[in-house]
Length: 429
Ligand code: ACO
Image (cartoon, rainbow, N blue to C red; front, side):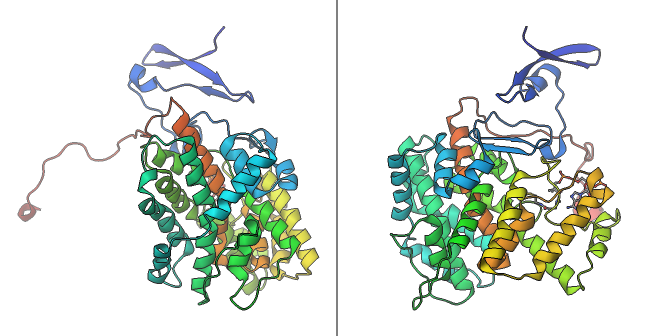
C-alpha cells in the first residue's frame, strides 16, 4: 500500500505522499501542501527541506558516507583524477579512454582568456579579494558568448560551457594571483594536464619554469576531487535557485562563487589558517580559544569545526588530514600551525561542549594547511574551493534544467511586520 503522511490542522486530516530515495531516504511530498491547507512550512535554513530529487551525490551525515554517482569518495580520491571526476559528476558515468581524452582536450582548447578579458585584471584592485574578481569574471563570460544564453541549450552547448568554465577558472585564478604579486601572466601550456597547468600558470615565471613535485600535484588533485560536489549545500542551492529562473550557466555559477565566499561555507578554509595564526601569535594557548568558542555570550566559533549534515565525522576531513601529514612528511615541511591544528583537534574531540553538539573537524580544517604548504596565499583558499566545486555546480544546473518537474524557486515566508497603517506625510512625522 502506498505510504501516506497525515497532518491534522484545524481538526481536518490531510494526506501527503511519502517519497523514498534509492538509499531509502524518506520524504513527505508537500508540493501541494499550501494549495490544500493554506498553511506554509517554516524551515529556517532549510535544514529539513528537500528542494529537489537528485541523482548526483549521496551523503549520509550520520554514517559519514559520501558518494559521487554511487562511487565512495574514498575510492575516487585514491584512484581518480579531478578531470575524470568532473566528467563523472556532469555526465553520470565514468568516461571511456576516448571520452576522457576528448573531455580533457576541451580544457586545453578553452584555457586561454580572450585579450579583452585581461582588462578585468587591470581594473580590479591589486589587493581586492580574489573571490570578487572570480565571481565577476565567471558572470562576464556570458558577455562573450551571447549564443549560449538561450534557455534551450543542446547537450553539445552545455558541454562547451562546462569546458569553458572548468578550464578558464584556473587561468582566472592564476592571473589574479600574478596580478596580486605584480608578476607577468604566464599563459597555459597545451602539453600539461589540468593540475600541472594550473600550478604552471600560478608559479612559473617568464624566466623560470615551476618545478612541479608529484606530491604537490597529487595533494591538489585530491583536494579538488574532495570538493567537487556536496549535494544541496549553500552555494549549489544558490546555483540551482538562480538557474531555476532559466538564467544561464555562467550567471548561475557566478552566484555559486559568491555564496561560497562566506566564512561559514567555502571561506572557512581561509579563516582556519587565520585562526591558527592568531592562536600562534597569542602564544599557542588553544584552550583560551576553545573557551571563547564555548562562551554563549560570544559569537566566536572555531573555524573548521561543525557541519550542517555530518554529525559524526566528515569523510573528506579524514582523507585530507592524512594527505596533509603525507605532504608535509614528503616535502619535509615543518609548520608550527600543523602542530597547533593537531592539538586543537585533539582537545576539541575530548571536550563535552563539542561532542554534545556533534561538532567535528570538517573538510576545511586541514585543507588550508595543504594550500599554504603549496604556496597559495591565504586569501586564495576559497578560490581553490571554487575550482573544485565547479563540476558539482555544473552537474546540478544541468540536472535541474533536464528535470521536467523543475519550477522557479520561490520560497514563502511568515510575515511578522507591522499591520496595515496609513502613510504619514513628512511634515506630520
Ligand atoms: N565553534 C563553536 N560552536 C559551534 C561551532 C563552531 N565551529 N559550530 C556550531 N557551534 C555551536 C553553535 O553555537 C550552536 O550552539 P548552541 O546550540 O549552544 O546555540 C550549535 O553548535 C549548533 O550550531 P548551528 O549554527 O545551529 O549549526 P549549523 O548547522 O547551522 O551550522 C556550520 C553549521 C555553519 C558549519 C557551523 O558549524 C559553523 O559555523 N562552523 C564554523 C565554520 C566552518 O567551519 N564552516 C565550514 C563548513 S564546511 C563547508 O562549508 C565546506
